[in-house]
Image (cartoon, rainbow, N blue to C red):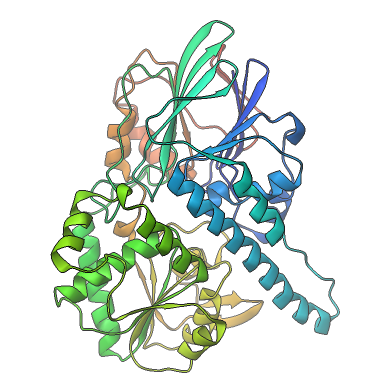
Length: 473
């Protein structure tokens, strides 16, 4: 078996891993690479393998950095199956359509400016038609039910506790008579998060593990502490009569924030101020969440039962659907909370809210997730004094609050426990989906344990299972 690391290697974006087994090819993830615009375009517009020779795809969850380039794969001629849980299938469907719509709208907006400046037009990576084709090839696979993938390989999906429908992937492989149990973690959720169940830990008998290490260098505070931080930041902003702008992933993070704000206002820990979810995708995502109550944890079910109203709806909450409703929020000056996509502030309606509010010191921008290098979200999180939005410079005068404790990724302590389920005689532990400082921090902890050798591949590297070696691509 060979593993080709075509994305999310020494970075946390663009997940894509190609497995070659028994002469067949299986792709784990097909995510969009997010980062420097030119590099992102170059990576996302092509594939480092012959699409015509690809036999199957397995998707761990619906986040755009894991699913977002599936329309390009289909447009390039892929006609085979894409396996995912039922919730991931539903979320991916709406997420890719929204991604295509945003790309088309942003290209149109930029081209109007380019026309005035005499610059050439830009083109979206893919269109709405490409996105709608993906759902026709997604085959739902229930949790913990084994299914054949390619010759000599069967798979099971186990709850990863990251977002609704997220999964770890377990492959039982017969590679020319050599048996191998391969565990791919996907994105590992945190224990005790709102809405979703806790992640299932790795089982016995794993020969080879590929694990994310996004927060390998730090452990998260208790979610209750993060919620307290969120409450205090909002209270400070209300005292200034300002607005709270939260760039948030439409899938997962937005629903968790809505649930937490619902609790805080229900329990009178926050005053009752308007909360707006301004993302067409987030609105549709919430509808999917309400259809998959079987994925909720026991605490959420109890909250819904005791309060006698849905976890993701309350009287101070408004889901914004139209562009006019979205624009109207920028004409208002009363305290409010606006949750808007995208999570890294690279596209979507959040850009308009940021450019209209970021220069007012009464306002606050709350960063609640990891931000990729070279993104607007990263520049805001670093508190750069001047940031560019749609090519224009804005002074960053609003307060910036970073609340890492709300992350849906496991922190260092939990990653150590996760990796610790491997036996010392396993073949290898491969760390992906993490920057170098995260890898270094985690490896220093793992080196004190009786584990197999740890490797950290670069983009384009190839892992040879038989020789247990990593070859530069």
